[in-house]
Image 1: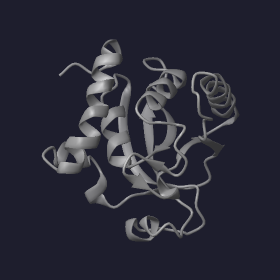
Image 2: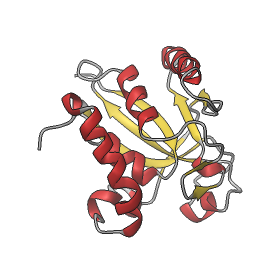
Image 3: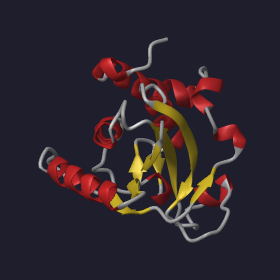
Image 4: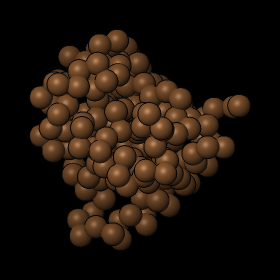
Length: 177
């Protein structure tokens, strides 16, 4: 089985990671940083807003089980692509909505999806689309954060509802417990 990768940013990576890990066909979701100017950025540096990086997740998936288009659908369901440089309480360019394509086909599919999505919202979709240059894995304590910290207040208020939304709206695509 050959796996593929997809990289998305839509607010805090803890929330996006937790929601996408629910999907059948997704073997790994890694929190990290991309689309900035600083080599080997740290969480503290990214949070300063000075590195240009976004908090993102890199998804490893089996395209024979879940397609890139299906991943796009879930990703755009769990965040608001009309919020510029923020998601809910998280404000700053590091929380921007971004799709980082791994190849021309992903870029084409994401562009078409964003264009179609733009017609569904009253406000403009501000999701950035650019090719992935470098993905920097976030510090270990950020990996599987929701899973390791289910009682964390931030996770309870922000990650848990996204996970529940995926479980409800995409029940047929969710891994069986």
